[in-house]
Image (cartoon, rainbow, N blue to C red; front, side):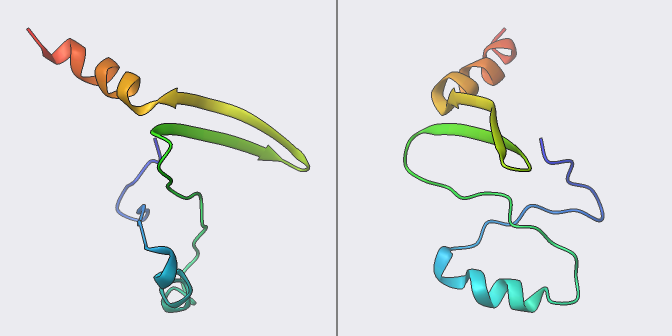
Length: 73
């Protein structure tokens, strides 16, 4: 989903450590791309100027089942 490769990584940081984590990356290009919550849903929003469009909105349980179902044989 995020194209992690040798030069790109997704890091999850607790909110109370975000400022110090971002300070440690001062010389490295980075972008905060989201946050977690307890809704049990994945929501991806595309932002273009002032316009926000929901690209993905799905329950985590449904996504997990979609991923795992083909592996049950």
